[in-house]
Image (cartoon, rainbow, N blue to C red; front, side):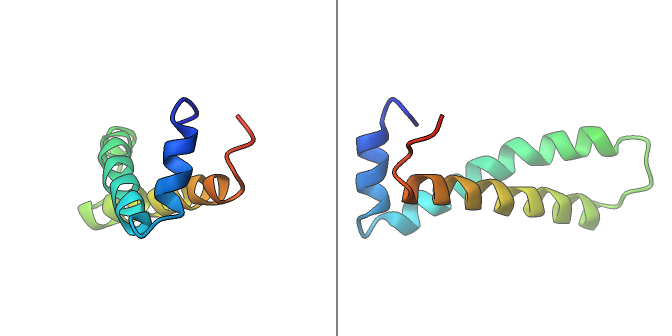
Length: 76
């Protein structure tokens, strides 16, 4: 994202902001759900709980990224 920061900031500031957020939510969830499933192996954690945990971390991560973009992507 740092390599494309002007592009990302323009998307964030445009009408396409919702598309950026949707993209981040979808791609982050795909990455996280596998990790959560792997960590949950052998534990008594149901599918609903696994989904909840993946969504929790998805929203946390995307929220931090959106805040970082909003502040101009100045930090690494």
